[in-house]
Image 1: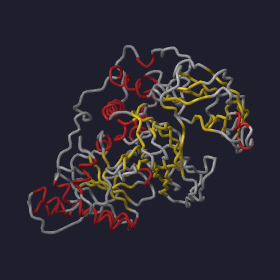
Image 2: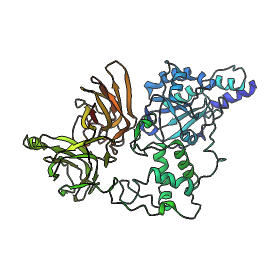
Image 3: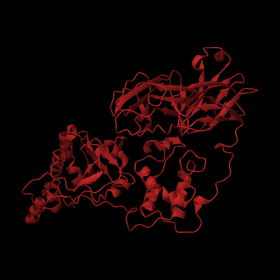
Image 4: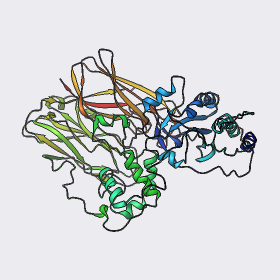
Length: 572
């Protein structure tokens, strides 16, 4: 055994031309044990990414954590990022955090669906992968050092080699590549629903129902998505992109941290099991077993309004948009035409041309407000708005917003040019209720407008606070940032000194401006402070960033920034 070990060690440090260990890997994204989002491609400026397979119940994997932290400290300033990945089903963030203790500084990526670990062919805990994020090449796979190999082989290690240290030194010094070192220690990872031996996936019985439930409301003719899931042929053609969006957490849109999902309704989500079903089917070649295509069946006829025919439709005046140029916000007064006061239970926007309309906000003005300061929209009260992902809003039972018969809308339009002239005719549909609700709704906000984001800063943190003056109920939260928005989290700090996390969006996506509606209203005693903590990515790794060389401040245009969340509340 000793001689075999010496041969193994000597092979491990042998340089070779055209290394056979390198292979291209797919981009992926995961949430770590602290609730932070990480995507491989966003680390493209790193010299290397180290990924270590970890489980809280594997003593072999846990034994190397101290070594990893030492190496992380050594190489962090030299552009190498260290991560652990937990591919074991059922392990919670809290349990992983407890198993590591306070000295660990390395994020643990929680692969709750196992899709990333399976795609990387991680077979055992305690395995090390070294990745070049610039070209998505896997540079090394295997043991962390010779002592780990010796421990796994139950033999004595006469010479000590730190394979990972040698690999990283070679990366930084542009030295010769190092061959993989076979790893047989740790625990074998079971991929029961993903392996070759698992049952094949049926398009009609397994895949189509998921697409109908999770995707087709947007991916249909006339929907907000760029293509329609109208048949197997369409879906199979887009299958590679579907796989990419699932592995990078781009779809479904506007995802919140899964640990908060149970507290909200109407959120876009997909379960780990559903995700595995879709990816397995795509990896099998997206087959169709024949017969009736469920996606090709005609969808039920509708009025075109998601919430049904409105009680009142208010059409906004046509807006002419030039082919090019930067457009200022438009403020257009629009009469509502109410004959009596009405309580609104829901509203929905019907967008005329969503290619040019970035967002629209309907404000209300009563008779007094209409006479005050008419410039820039004048005095007004925020009623509701549209942005991608927020076409309609329903209010909770026993709540509503009052529209008085003397009110009009002051409508704010924000248009962007797309290389062709356009005419936009947008409408709003209003849904009324017969009686005054028990809890009339008003809007408040938590915001910070004083930030200055330095050029190139990949994680510029901001914080905002809002005081709740009276006992109130909180019903929903609508965050808003622009192209550099990265993440945001909200919590309530109560007068008795306790704190409660309300919502976390680890990967904020500017293209989807959602309203997150609480399943049960949250009681906020007078004196409660709502705290918003977020970050902007003004670096070149942010593919949406218009110009990472520019300093960024608050502003209306998308290349400026905002940090604000509107909240619907009702006094107790």
